Image (cartoon, rainbow, N blue to C red; front, side, top):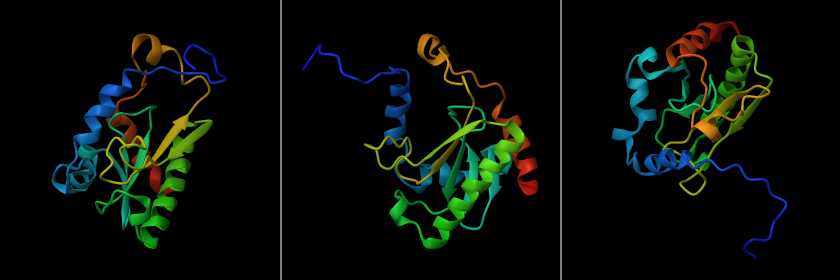
Length: 171
């Protein structure tokens, strides 16, 4: 019933709606998919941290936190159920390696991992599967995004990519 309180806390983030709306229709196929086009360019230009056999690791262009990585298959497929056993195994291994590298380089105290499937599931780019690896630190969800519509990212994407790519082989 309207006006009757429930037990849920709510975090209102209306600034995210612009990203959500723009993301839903921006990719119509492989030709305009950033996850298909990225591997065709140099790693630094595309923010690619590591290339595997069937999947790769790239920095999120719109990170929730510094070091927010995406693990993507090279194939343009939308759903987790569309990938092969080999792709599944490599995506899992690259996710684990991403966490090891982030722990060494940035020392997060936690992680959020996940795949948003389909437009209704919240996928910004629903046409191409991608696994999020988001490093977390105590207090990283402060008041900036809510009050000032600003997310504090303490390093440039290029610098973060360079440090993660350099640490990748050692972890």
